[in-house]
View (tube, rainbow, N blue to C red):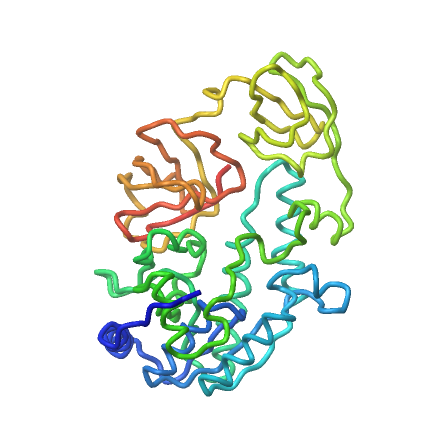
Length: 381
């Protein structure tokens, strides 16, 4: 339960910051998932004097059998919270059906990566194509000047005058990693009022405002999923895909046992292998064509001091021409590591780390920072 109250002085400071934004819009579209973060973000924009239109995306069908099992994308319980919040703060609220787009642009792409022995990041795809891409289009159709979401990140001007993406102030909640793929033009129309707040403050503020979801439990898993079932298995079943079974082998090629399909495994994985080697074993490589997964007991073999990433999105293109030093994250939960970043082409970079990094995983995102600023990001080859 949230017991502390949000200080009035702090609230006035946050609202003043929103009002002083040189981009301050007259009307915005608020993506409302039903959670406390998006609810407070919408309220802050409304309180700062902006007309807010609430939108909840329907990405999965909602029927009686699924309501008990599915998470945020179904929209049953969460739709109730979104509607209640919109009513509480006095804004209009609508639903947009993006089920087909979600299936084609996020789920199918994620499965395609799993089937190739890679580990996808569907949240980045969903942000780029739906939560910001499609919503930005819809916002312009209804005369809204931008999108507000509950992401913990910040948008601030760069020396060039363009808008840059920065980490949120709460290091435990910063979500800039998931936003690296946003188009620069779209980023300039994004508003993240929670970027200056901590999660605790957001819950305090929700309590102060009287939002019904102030104490709502936070979802830690993929929004598309079923409790107790691996995300890749849910994808396979829902999309009607076939598995690629095969064998575990040691580094010499000796067969150690069979496995249930390459989509179950990721580089560096050591749990759920079902193979006893007398030592901890790790997935060191995956061959999606033959279904062969190499296991190694030498964890040091998983460490590399370089990577290449492709489909690179430059949020600050001033860094694009020459090698530079930055801090690179190869997964959301990892601390950034110092590295030299070498642009190889317009959409490809090489990263040379100062220290060796464990389990650099193909399909995951490599995001480059300087301080709090996101320079670029791409998909690990």
